[in-house]
Amino acid sequence: MATAESTALIDVGILFGAVALAGLVANRINQSVIPFYILVGMLLGDYVLGSIDFPALLGTELVPHGAELALADTDFVHVSAEIGIVLLLFFLGLEFNLDRLIASKERIGKAGAVDLAINFGVGLLLGYALFGSFLAAFLTAGIVYISSSAIITKSLIDLGWIANDESDAMLGTLVFEDLFIAVYLAVATALVLGGGAVGEALGQIGVAVGFILVLLLLVYLGTEWFQRSLETDSHEFVVLRALGITVLISGIALSIGVSEAVAAFFVGMAFSATEHVHDLENLLEPLRDAFAAIFFFWIGLSTDPSLFLGVAGLIAVAAVATTPTKLLSGYLGGRIYDLSERRSVRVGLGMTTRGEFSLIIASLALSGAGTALPEPIAEDVYAFAVGYVLVMSVVGTTLMQYSSAIESVVVPRLEAGIGSTSPSSDD
Amino acid sequence: MTIYESDLPGVGKKFEVELEDGERLVIVTHNTGKREVYLKANPDADGDKLFEVSDRLARKIGTILEGAYFQPVQAEAVETMLSDDTYLEWYNVAESAEIAGQTLEEADIRDRTGVSVIAIQRGDDLISPPTPETVLQVGDTLVVIGEREECAEFETLLGDEV
Image 1 (tube, rainbow over the protein chains, first blue to last red):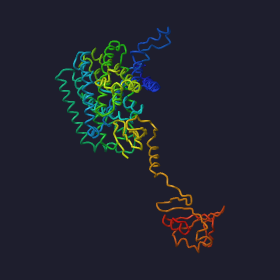
Image 2: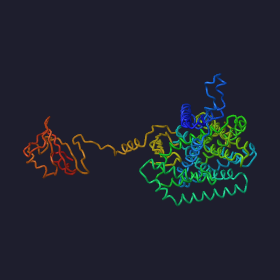
Image 3: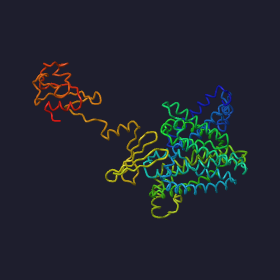
Image 4: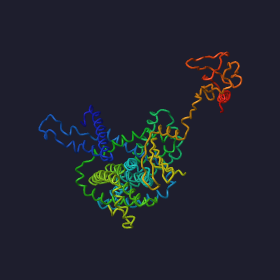
């Protein structure tokens, strides 16, 4: 169905229908929707559905070949996925409040620094051991470092933890991670698009830093303009203008080799200083979620599950190595927030989930295939990241759901002073 | 009573209200406007979710709790506000009322209080408009129109202490 123009609408319909169904299933079994969106994308793509030869299988020519049914990675899907990335980061910027960060900078800074040092550090070592190159290690470090704001926030609300003290530590650490990831993406994009050569990469980083400085200037001096840009009573106009500004600036950024996600983050920050924050959140949230769903679907679509076989070992090693590191950094973060042993353990359990940002880094890795990264390594990093996110999103949500059972085992030991150095040894 | 306020980045705001016996009421205001209300048995306990409501409903409930949403209604006088300070009210003529048995002309209500009697309900009959010769009887319900202070003045004529 990939080629004929008349079927484009059917393809998009199948895409949305499949994603909706995946969301329904995930909800029924109390799991995060993200891995299900990815899986359904994988199933409907060229690699799975496309490789099934129905006529041979069923012995009749009346059934079409799987290749004719599979959804292709069309421009629509690709651009929608990119809009998904842009909107995800736009929201980060929109909800990112500098005053808020400064107000509790000490605790957020300490807990965030511990989180960064442990997880990014282990990620670098792990990435270098697995892939043997600096850029691949740098990308791996980002993939295993960044927890999923989307999944964790939703789980906090679903489990009712949002009313408890642990939510402060978790959300505070997420804010630190989000800020770091904005800077990280700027550097990583420059490295990847710079083609791997040091000179070019430095040039790219220069362009990126320059562009970010321009955006920062726009954020600080342009509040008035951003405020006026959305002065209208019409919801339609608010949505159109916000998209017009955000997507255009992100597109310009990408065209000169700066991360579109970072640009969107700064545009979001600029709007966060206006009075329209609430409207934008209400009006754009469904749009963000719809495009983000396509992004996850697209990630699945571009993933060849057979590549998992090659990286299954790497995924297992990474999962085993980085679940305890998040448990530890989360626990220490909880202690920095003066939480009890029990709540600190919970922070650790909650922070293990990785998700959307790891996938953004994965798609970045893929775009550097053949230039910054040798193609096999880029594909390995990509497949590794997708598999890793699938595993960690399920592990993380499950750990949160069974936290009371885990707490009852771990907390008494912690309180007795045994294993006071690491909560991970008890898992 | 102490109220703790904290930000929930990406979610909204959280308020913790200290109740008696160390209990705490936790109100999470989502960016979407949704409110979730939890009760904690003590500051260290996990929150038990009581209910969640939409922004609109939360505001209604809030004004009721504040005591501002419903005006207490007096059984004797039903008041309806016509404009900022003009009321349409119903009054019963009790035996203690000094105007009982007088005609409207004798009672001279308009000059003495400022209110106008626009109708009199007597049993199943409605006298509207009443004439100066209409005699006010015990048990009548007078429908009057006037400003708040004038209505209060009129109540004293009826022998009701305000």
